Amino acid sequence: MTPGESVSMLRHSWLMFVVITFVNAAIWWFRGRPEMAKNPALTWGYRRLILGFLIYGNIPWLILGAVFELPRAFRGPLLIAFAITIVVYWIAGVWWLAFGGGAEQLAAHPGILRGPPRDAWTIKVQVLSILGATLVGGVLVSIFFVFVAVPPILR
Image 1 (cartoon, helix red, strand yellow):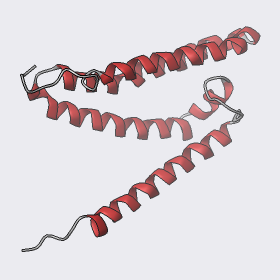
Image 2: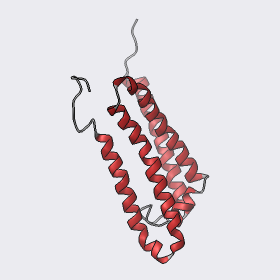
Image 3: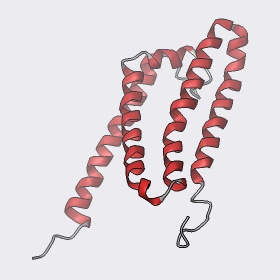
Image 4: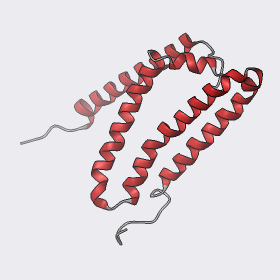
């Protein structure tokens, strides 16, 4: 750490996200316990879904942690890796939910998703509408910054 860097909570905020990921996994496990008691065949599916969430859910936060903990020379490439990881996860997650059987797995394992959607079609519609709204919002924000917020370059 150089003298100009601060030792603040922000520097170690990535640890908070790792802890939150583990807390979410524990909540999902405890919410699924009644279903596993009714149908023990679901236990392996809960374990696989929660373990996948723990592994894949913590990779971006560990990359972000490396940005703060490693020397300054590594920060640029690691920030790019963090951003790429997030984009790849969005694409892979939507693909898994919509086409890879993820919605069916989530519907078959109550407690992981909160609320009433217990059929795969509802889960797919919700995810795809959230994705559509996010893309439309991103395009509108980009248009705003290009045409309204950023003044033209004067020569």
